Each structure stands twice: as structure tokens, then as C-alpha cells.
Length: 245
Image (cartoon, rainbow, N blue to C red; front, side):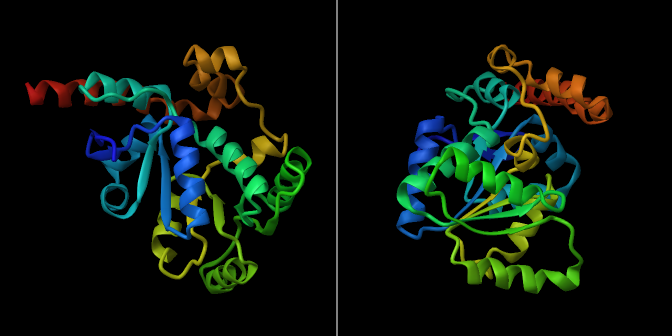
């Protein structure tokens, strides 16, 4: 097991993308449970203001991965070795590829009505043989949750991807993890929208230049308030390091 990089109280495991894909694929094939969170700076800052969420990340999640340049920077700045970012969307695609190769059934849960089905269709186009065991949109009442859980379990899915947005998706998975049968439980934010072609991903040069946050802001100016978490994150990490000296 790699040394955990504790960033503002959030325990991040510094796997590379290849290591994360290999572990999660093999664990799923062996029916080992994994509740996975890909933590960027925004998620880590959400945890500072939401004690329930922070406890979930620290005590309930099985594997927290470094999603985002900010998380990678913070881990290395605090003295850990964090080799690269494991972006949630890219991990999701890699796992779909492995699911198709290994005949692992998957379930798409979340997004606006019809989006999960469109993402599933695109997944099947990209990876022939991908078995999408079921789809369900993210609009539901508390009264419908038992039915959703039953549908997921009845589908036979071994990987459950929940696109409900953070922190809702992690809280939902944590609340029902003992009742859900899939081995892999993972929140993936807006990934269905991207796979379905409804939302554009930053060009690779912007991803490589660690400017994906700027691309998102350009495409969705309404995210400006959420982006204020980034400078707060930098100051909080620097403050944490100064306390360790």
C-alpha cells in the first residue's frame, strides 16, 4: 500500500492512472468492494465546510484518488510523492474499456433524463461488447430510492457509476453502500454529459497545462463562485504546511 497523502484531513492514495485502473479492475473481478472518490481541490474544500462529507471521505471511502492538478500540487507541496492526476472522467473511460474487455456489467445512474442512455450508447459504440446492465436518471424522490437500489441490484452490475454531482453522489453511495451489490461504487460528476457529447472537455493542451479549470469557467461562467475554492485551497494548504514546521 502506498503512503497516503493527507491533504487538509482528506486521505489521498497517490496511485497513477494505470495503477488505479489495474487495482479497481482486478478487485471488481475478485468481487472486492471499493467505494471510490476522485478528489480535486474543490471537493477537498467542500469537506472543510461540511463535517459530514469530511468524515465520509476520511472514514467511509475505500479509495480517494488525486483528481486535479491542485491535489497533485498539494500532495507534493506537503512532502508526499503524488506522481500524477487521476482525473475522474479519464478513469471512468478506462474502467469502461476494462469492463468491455473483461465482460464486467456496469450501471449508469444519474444525469438528466435520457443522458445516461445516450452515454451508454456512446460507450457501446466505443467499446463493442460493453454490457450496460441498466440506466437510471438522477431525478428522484426519497420514496423512489428503494426501487432504484432494487433495480441496480437486480441488474447484476458489478460497477456502479453515479453521476449526481459532489457531494450528493458520495453521500448517496455512502448511505446505501451496504445495500448495494456492485463491487465498485464511484461518483463521476458530469461524466455522462461529456461522454454523451453534451458537454465539451478541455483540449488536451489545456489539460496538460493544468488549465482545465479555466476552460470550464469559460464554458460555464456560472462556476465562478465555485472556482473561488481554488485560491482558498492554496492558502489552506500553505497554512497546513506552516503548522507542520
